[in-house]
Image (cartoon, one colour):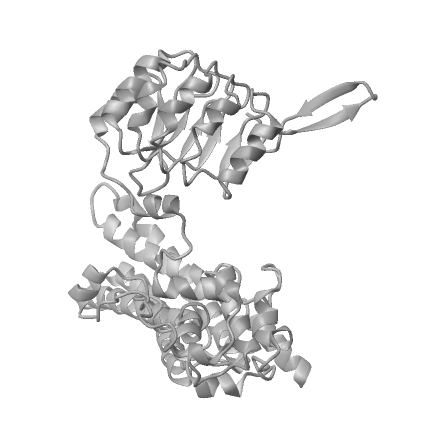
Length: 482
């Protein structure tokens, strides 16, 4: 009997595979019916009945498989009942629409035509209702509205979402209700709530979380490694027991760290932050709940705030001249620019510095005939964060033009004539993190001296490999190859 039950559930798992067939066929049948009423597409009329029949048959198969899947449990009985009866009604009305179509084509009476049109309309209503409640069973009742823009929410009368609530006083914040519960709400509760309790587990209330699911307790106070919640999030995402399931938004490393911290501190539900131990790494994460910009660099904050939109006409003008210029990312006004060595680089750089002084943040001038003098316009790009000058003829003098680029984070000067004196001029660039100076005039001593002044900076000079005891070969570090 147990094996028989397992086989029924096994077949029921094919319900999601088949349910899209009736949706496609029935919607197509209605579209064909509408199109065939025009003179241009009148020839489609015979296809309507065939498509309706396919839709009705596939709806019947999907309904049978859905009833089998329902035996697996873990669904809200109220939602399941509504979805089930809407699905059954859809099967009845889709077959009814097909029968009326056949009869209408034979007798062509006004009554049959009206009944046929009415059955199609009701069939679509049932299709939408069954789909909506089916989605609610699978993804939760708020699935459709969860990411709805506030403007649309106002239009349909739903409350406006204000986004994650910042903690104003971290010490007084409740560990569970203010820190842990929002994580569960965002990443876990769509599958473990009052409407859908996957694995007989609900996580939307403290009582439900403590109760656990069909596999027992979801957490072991004081021991994250033995807690099923933590074990599941660390499984490979291809594992069917990995949580959240593959395809859903995953927990961030910071969110996992907070869950582990909460469980490690005994999984308290009524303690404040000031009443539990906080390691340095956890404190850094907690600070972001007070200030989203905590632990972010100036460059990250700059790029997150975006900039003013660039002039579209000017953009097209530079593109027509051969300049590679595009947005840094989707929905961003920041620009990344590459000027080819065969173009009039000096003129184009000067023009760009006037046209887009605020928007250009990545600039690539590698292998171009740029000189110390013609590099001067670079100082106008106050928001520049990445600059490539490798394999150019620039010298120490060129570095003077970079001294005001306070957001510069990445600089590549390998293969250039810049030496120790030149990089000394970069000492006040507080955001500079990586300097690639392989095969330049920069020595190991010069690099070390600058790194001692700029603790956050890494100067990469490549490394050497001894070959045949006499031949020394310089090897380009990973990331510098074109």
